Image (tube, rainbow, N blue to C red; front, side, top):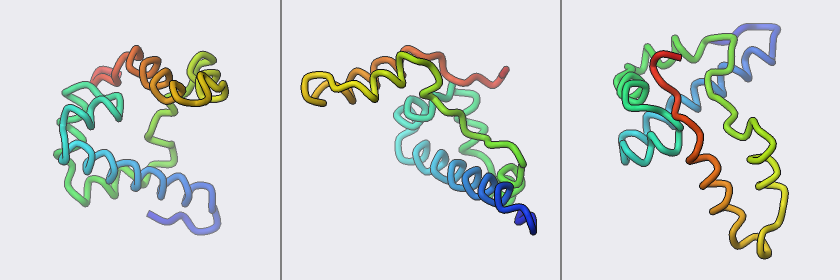
Length: 108
C-alpha cells in the first residue's frame, strides 16, 4: 500500500483506509445512522459493510481520495463559519443542510 518517495500518495492511502474502516464501524454499530452520517444509500452501505479486510486495503491503495467532502457548497461552508445564536444552533443548522443533500448512490 505504501508508495515510497511520495508522501502525498501515502497520506491519501492512509486517509482512504481510515475512512473505510470508520465507515464499516459506523454501519455495523447502527446501519441507518451510519448511512445518514456517511451520506450513503442502501446499496453503497451494503457494499461497504461487506468488504473484507483484504478488499479494504486494496480499495484504500487507490491514488484518489475515496471520501467525499460534504461541505462543498457555499451554504454549508457559511453555516459552519457563521455564529447562529452564539453557536447554539450552528451544528443543528449544518446538520439540516447536509440532510438535504442526496446520498451517494451505487450508480455514481
